[in-house]
Amino acid sequence: EGYQEIIPPYLVNKESMFGTGQFPKFTQDVYTIIDEDEPLTLIPTAEVPLTNYYRGEILDEKQLPVYFTALTPCFRS
Image (cartoon, rainbow, N blue to C red; front, top):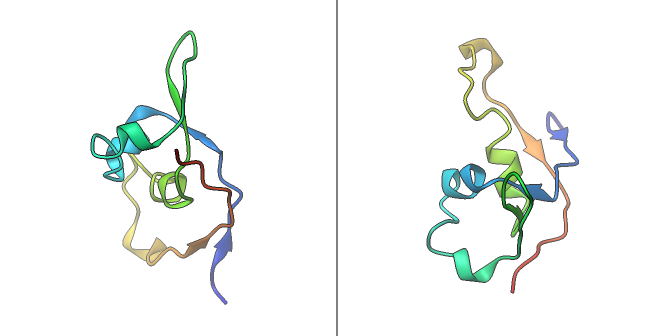
């Protein structure tokens, strides 16, 4: 109870992978799709899009704690 169910995107940008510590260590373990504008990576775990949900924002203390849950496929080589 108290968790917000999220259906996160299956593709994330490079900043999201670096922000969760997946890159540069696991760069060879993921699938990257080369787009014209920006390379996108298939998520290795739901953690990546969930922890980036509020990236770049400052939350008011009254909004905390925030609880998320998600069920996703994980794409790893």
